[in-house]
Image (cartoon, rainbow, N blue to C red):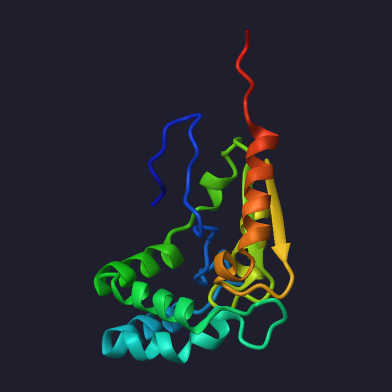
Length: 175
């Protein structure tokens, strides 16, 4: 299974940096698919509890530069709970079971992957680093001590890096 995209257009979405995460015969360094199934079962039993139990690593508790107010953490957790559970389950399933390796190698557009080296939800070696290796025109930025929620903990740096990437790749109209 792959994605649908038009040639010359950006493909993908923020946070979708998975070459292939599940272990398969030709992807021995992937994670055992049973672990992902167990996670989905946890979500079905009590998604809210799972969110609370995973709050510290999500927000980088104890990591330098990862201070996020309790109000912002509460808002983020409430936002997570507004996601339809079946949508979250199916997104997780497709993200770990879809093999994007062949398709990623065909993308020629400039791409940027930004990921923290302390991302407990999507470990860098299994996600961003592997994806960056497959993309022919990719820039990988790894933020030190950044968790999955780097969009909150490192927002100024992230915004500056995104704007710089856009500026570096903006097409200047002829004329």
